[in-house]
Image 1 (cartoon, helix red, strand yellow):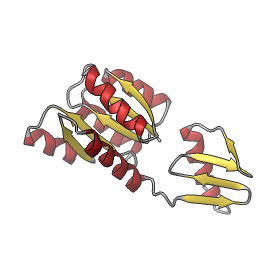
Image 2 (cartoon, rainbow, N blue to C red):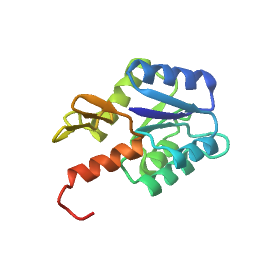
Image 3 (cartoon, helix red, strand yellow):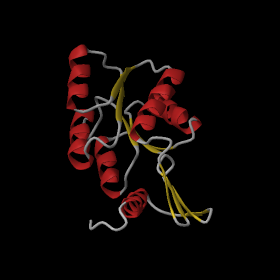
Length: 169
């Protein structure tokens, strides 16, 4: 899975990246909300880890943008030093799926990431059509056992079409 991290604090950005990579996922990190927003317009991610306060574009504004563009499909977890109840309620109400306050406990944070990914992309989400096999969890397509290189968007489009053979889309 591909995880994007927006964290202004480099030490937490590196910690979160290490946790995500240890779980076997790809991680791209950003220190600025505008840079992440631009990256999301060119490429997709499977999970977002956002900071409440960030330069360029704050986490709440980025969350609203993601929800308006991608809907509820992409899970979002906030990892931030701000433990104010009002802000936590605000983020969860705006569409965040989880909220973690610093200091981050690596084991717990990893379990939360895996739980969100498990719910968003069920492990048994395999689709087989003839020689084609789609693994939704890892976003991999194989043809007769050989992997096919596809971007995230290409994978989702191919899976949509193969899931709806015989239907007009």
